[in-house]
Image 1: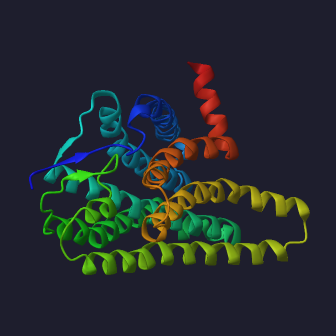
Image 2: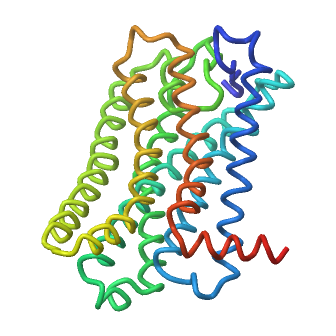
Length: 302
């Protein structure tokens, strides 16, 4: 098998043109918002801090996720360009899975950043220097590649017999595996274990960070200090909710929602790569005063 056919959203083929409108809108808003954050942080020396460097890493993963999927999906919706080569399919799958793993690791690093800023503010600059943030980013990249690499390698060795129609807008690993006529035992076990190791561990570390943060906030007597500490976390909490909620819904419905219509599975999968890249820069732009002020200053100057 040298090529596959991505069919888009099965059952909604007649509405592909209309579906492409929110796809393109979310993608354009996401590009504008994320590039704006990168531009402002890169230009303003005062924003060259660990918190904003981590935000830039998050922005890059958001851009990578949406760009891996949306251009090809729009080609399917607008021009019926459904063909994708085997190597192209596996490359798309590997990039998307790796970026998703890096995205999750960066959210963990951001929760650690908030923990240090609230629980140990006097040592913040020594514990989290820019060099250490860069090392955290490198570790996140290596972890993502090492954990995800076996998935496309296993997919490349699966037999597909005569079936080359992938009912999806992109080469999701589960969607590709489902059309195989080979043994999927290893693939299912590995995917399940990686879900526990990556997502489960990351969520536990984030929860631990916030438990420690809450313990410190409760011990503070001043209500004003309470609000200030909570405000430093609201943007990160919002990003966690926008990132993990569609991801968990998408994976759970794919693995256990046997009675759910196929187009629901696919729409949820696309929400995960469309909505967080669009909302994350808005959340940080609204909830982070320093970033908001710098963006306003640059807009007014222009």
